[in-house]
Amino acid sequence: MRLTVIGCGYVGLVTGACLAAAGHEVVCTDIDKARIDQLKAGKVPIYEEHLDEVLKRAVAEKKISYTADAGEAIRAGDVIFICVGTPPKESGEADLSAIDHVARQIAKEARTPKLVVEKSTVPALTGASLQKALAAYSSSNSIKFQVASNPEFLREGTAVGDFFHPDRIVVGVEDEESAAKLRKIYAPILQSSFHCPIHAGKCPKGVSGELLVTTISSAELIKHASNSFLALKISYANVIADICEKIGADVEEVTRAMGLDPRIGTQFLKAGLGFGGFCFPKDIRRSFIFPRRWALISICSRPRNVSTRNAWTAFSRRYTRPYG
Ligand SMILES: NC(=O)c1ccc[n+]([C@@H]2O[C@H](COP(=O)([O-])OP(=O)(O)OC[C@H]3O[C@@H](n4cnc5c(N)ncnc54)[C@H](O)[C@@H]3O)[C@@H](O)[C@H]2O)c1
Image (cartoon, rainbow, N blue to C red):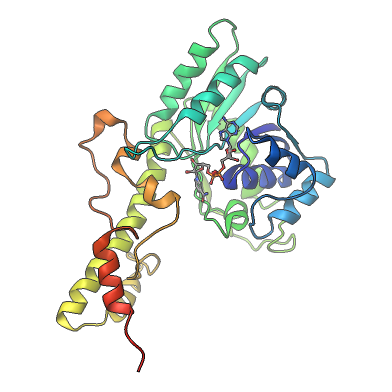
């Protein structure tokens, strides 16, 4: 299929590269012209294991191309993946100005029907707003736009592996036609029928999960509910660590034994600093997840992250001991 990827950062480049490896024709664009020039010159602006070789192969097979001309990119694809940044504002709310900018460009430049897929992490109900924005900005033409949500769960560092062998692919749609297009796009990934750089082209069976078709709102919430649950697990381990410290127990013994119960699991159940990075702390903030008028709803109450003073104090007391 002919696909467009808007935004060539971590998510956009990995998405573009891996979907090109899956056999689709991908055109990538970015507002940052220097980034596009770099890509055209064969330089990859981010480091991700295997990304370089996947891109090189896709370029050689003429499956991927780059352009700084957003209009050209928008007209090239039948399905458009929006992968632009959604940083937090000072208030904690998501800054969706890049999504709005892209919606305007799509509405202005499209000449044929498009399925517009939000891959960026966005607050709940953004899909509905995007649908309205596309209709409003394109009121002078009669192009049909469908909207879908396809949240990204990749982790920086293992992004290519995560994309090629996902635990699950979530597609939120509002009609069967959109679901069919997204199933077709992801079929080679689920069937491992692409050249896999991790397994030298021979992926073991069962290495990829399943594709789940949901409503757009469910897909948006799955991303937030998953992130918040992981944050809660880490925070819970830290609460247990505080209790262990008070009563003279060993938190590693406690969490290891807890994690051996398959209903609990060992991952994200380690006491320590908390969680950090750019995406995780921003994504789980209540003000990021829900529109302002929903401020009373909370998925994750009082998560602890690296910047929380108590977590730092407890961490340094527990782990920063003098030698000797
Ligand atoms: N990085 C991750 O691990 C990760 C994982 C899952 C989801 N996400 C989400 O995916 C989205 C993208 O994240 P990222 O890490 O790739 O961000 P990034 O900052 O690495 O890349 C964003 C890219 O979008 C481009 N851009 C911004 N406005 C644009 C516009 N109007 N038109 C065209 N291009 C534009 C930027 O120049 C940049 O290259 C965010 O919503 C993020 O929360 C990120």
